[in-house]
Image (cartoon, rainbow, N blue to C red):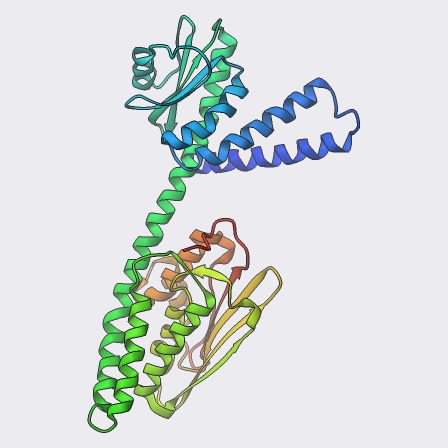
Length: 379
């Protein structure tokens, strides 16, 4: 994990330096700076071009995309990228040298190796060697070997970012499965019980509720896509509340206030619905009398602000803190799950905010960036 953090910091620093270099050179037009200035800018620009391919992970396609830029960085005649089994891609003229023995030596030792016109530097992710970068040049030198080693270290940091993204995706999928497992038994039991109560007294009503239940479960248990739109999430919430109103009757009131311009906002799948279910279960089930659930989604410029509020029993804030920190996950799996997934996707600044006190209801807020490069809107 320390290596991943280091890689992230290094990548952020590289982007910042590149942005500053570009601004500084443009500010000095028309001279474009000294030759050293231009060389620095060109190096940073080349690394920025190679980075996207490497952040997709180490395979033949990403290696082929990154190699021309790596070759430019090192000024070598021919360059290759390998995994632990053999070459993934070559770039450059001439016959490809027989480098298998040197590659095995570099991968086995985890250090740069050179022989004749060939230099091989290992690529590592969290201290695990995953491949190598191979340089074939007219004349090897100690300086080129050092440069190859540094470029390989930078490439390794990009591969670590790729692995981090893969791990994040796997974590989100696991958390989503856990959330479905937590929600389904309680809700399914109560919904089927409410539908059964109308079978004899109001068959048409029972039929309508059964269709709502089918649509709700089809959405909740779909097996593809980490993200959804706010409009889709709100439609699922509407079905959920129809089923709960069949159970609670006039005890449950629902108020919805949604700005039309935020309906297309993309957000993590099942990130609002569990909060509404939590408001019903923990806010209204545990108290006598009527209760109101208020769902709002407002446009606040670069973000969409979503709040779920109930006037139910409320809870000790310490119980909420324990649930969100993982010290008492049984208190509210839904809250903790949504909070973790929001932080995973958007960063720690986007965790949920809970305002509550015994006897005063609960208000849960979450902010969703309207545009985020980390969100796949096609999901």
